[in-house]
Image (tube, rainbow, N blue to C red):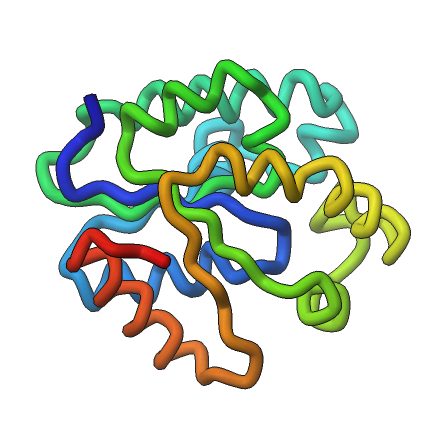
Amino acid sequence: MTQAGNAVLIGMPGSGKTELGRRAAKLLGAQFVDTDMAIEIIAGTSIAEIFASQGEAAFRRMETETITDLHGAYDTPCLVATGGGVVTVPENLPLLQMLGTVVYIRRDFDAIASGVTYGADRPLLTDPSALETLWASRKELYESWADRTFAVIEGEAIGDAAARLAKTIAEGNVS
């Protein structure tokens, strides 16, 4: 059973989950949670430092714990932006489904590649070939995990895209 009114955003790094989610939540009067930011607050350090000092497996455990902790944590509807790798841990799927409607923020690869930043802040995105590898290994997972898909229209202003996302979430018809 999902928590009524919640939506969970999944998608590639650089697809716009955080910015679209933050803006759409404000328009909906919903709480906004970014799981990566929550992990950094709980851990008291950056994701890059977690990867460097403890490894990806430790980060993924923290991510699963954070998603688990979100269940029932808010009395009002919540919009949750997840990290791009949330789909790499199969046990996260039922947790996300129980949390809310899972929405894949789909953006064209070339648009992501031209706008994403590479380097220390994104430990798995060291260069464009790393992005290609992530895309190839995750694209089908995003599609199969999603209850709904929201297509980012290239050239659309971020505010307009967020309003469109908010409207479709409110109508329960994300597509």
